[in-house]
Amino acid sequence: MRKTYVLDTNVLLHDPDALTRFEDNLVVIPIEVVAEIDRFKRDPSEKGRNARAVSRLLDELRTKGNLADGVPLDDRHGGQLRVVFCRAETLAQLPPELRAGNGDHNILAVALEQRLQDVMGNQPPVVLVTKDTNLRIKADAVGLIAQDYTTDKVAIADLYRGFRELWVSAELMDRIKQPEGLAADALPASSPGAEALLANEGVTLVNQLQPAHTMLARYNAASQTLQPLQRASKVRLGRIQSRNREQTFALDLLLDPSVPLVTLLGKAGTGKTLLALAAGLHQVADERLYERLLVTRPVISLGKEIGFLPGDVDEKMGPWMQPIIDNLDYLLGGADDIQGGGGRASQRGPRSSWADLKGMGLLEVEAISYIRGRSIPRQFMIVDESQNLTPHEVKTIVTRVGEGTKIVFTGDPYQIDNPYVDAESNGLTWLVERFKGQKLAGHVTLCRGERSPLAELAANLLE
Image (tube, rainbow, N blue to C red; front, top):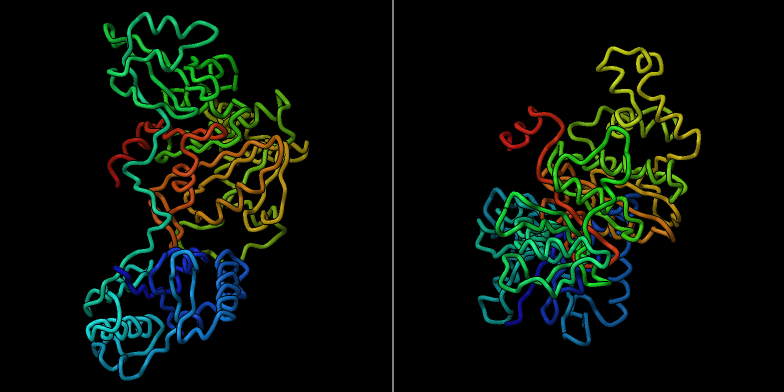
């Protein structure tokens, strides 16, 4: 059955192509939404770019006819778009608390008018689509159907973990040690977890007769074989070594130049950023596989802003990059000197390693705000706290990757500070789902915290 979808402003700012995603249905845009889009179009952020894209699309559709009467959206599906005004008499039918005439209430009034026409049999069922939770509650209170915009949502409970367990015979575990590895078609179909393997998926092989005997491997989609993990044990990363199997899977992907896109998810303290920095520094400074280590993260604060930050770009980025500085100091020796009572860390200061790497041209800090339009070749790029990015922002970043660059996204979808995304609609989980099974990408969900027993307990109890 055809439906009428009334769209809120936040839907279009989240996805400027949302107008075209409702197939053969009628899409209604309240005039209040057009006014709000106009107010956002000068914003220099991603919202401003999306607002300008929506304005261009509406202007293009205007050439097909009168927007008030309705214009075709897609010749294939037969969808239509209409721009509708809020009528005073409809606004008066709202409860007294909702008659103030602000943006949300005007949008509610437009949806209500469409619903009243539906009651008279002139219109298909009406649905208000908004990412504003409170507006959905208000819509429900006045008898309207309201939904979130879920086109880019990923079911977080079913998100791909990047690894699995396979129970096999001792003979198969011996065969994987051969140079050609273990052919995937040699795995018994009746073995638990033996459904089709995905490219670069980590596998824990468990001996059926001796469950304590295990081996870690990764599926090579090109040769369709399981290969034992070796990189993490062969490469020395200073004081860093994997402390659990998920970290071993992660390091194997991070150290493999044939996998240019790696995503690491995990709660606080699982080692996402530390592992990425350690692998990046090793391949930049020791192996010279990449020209420099490029680190960036969204500039979104946990709490209330403290105000204007003085200085140049590097000085402004300092507070946002402090977690990276802390990890670099730990990797390059400062933490040992502090813990052991040595004097070198106190003499040089925690920023010395950071400044030295930047001075040698091995480390670069880039604000995500300035990444559009760049081409980034031969670099090891880390995007930290990427759960705060929208899918469109993630797409913008990945499409900046040039020849010979490896990009790593790290984040925790349960620690989101961006008010416009949630655990199921953020760019990181969207990226994991879209690149699942691709030969150029690998993913690991880190499960166990290794920062400290207290941090692990807090992450588990304080949810």
